[in-house]
Every structure is written in C-alpha cells, then in structure tokens.
Image (cartoon, rainbow, N blue to C red; front, side):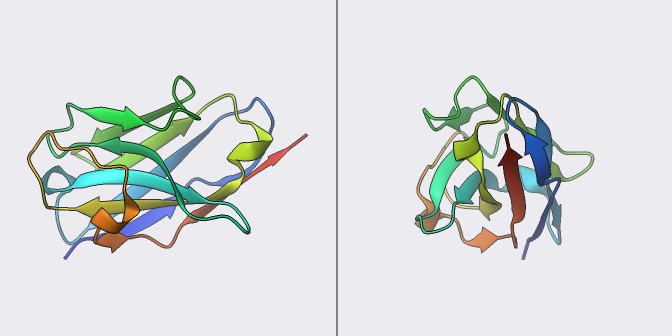
Length: 127
C-alpha cells in the first residue's frame, strides 16, 4: 500500500510561488493516478489538479488553470504541484491523493475516488 507525505507548504506573499511535494513510499507513483486537493477553513475539500497513471494527462480546476502545474518524477517517486501567482483564496491545507483504479489515461476530480491520502501541507498567503 502506498504511503503519501506532503511537504513544501508555508507562508508566501500574494503573487508568490511555492512547490508542493507529495512523496510516495511503499509503491511507485507510476502505478497510481494522483490528485491534489485543498481544504480551506470552514469549506469542503475541493479538487485542484490531477495527473494520470501514464503521466501524460493532466487536468486542473478552473480556479487554478494557468497558475498551477502538476508533474511527476518517477525517479524520485514524487508528485509536485507548482503553485504560482498565489492569491489569498489559495490559502488552504493541500492534500495529495492516489488511487490505482482506472485506465492509464484516466483523470478524476472527485475526492471519493481516491483511496490513499497524505496528511496535508498548509499554504498561507499574506498581503
């Protein structure tokens, strides 16, 4: 079973950038479709970005399209989320999820279709 550990969050000024990491252990990321989700205080968890098992397909929420990029490094067994041009509304705990179901090109924005989750990393955006 895969274990996921997020890191890279922190305090950043509006307009700044961060690179979030999701390190996997116990299994290789190439066997899983991966997704990033976030949850702000008092709000439900929402989809941010996804990458397919093949690594060749990505999908983004409209709110982050053009600003966030999801990538995968098989050698490091890690999935990244590059977050640029941060806005106050991006403040949240960011979680990565993994699931081994579906075709190699399948992408999924629904959190309940991810079986494995990390503990999250906090992103805070200041003025």
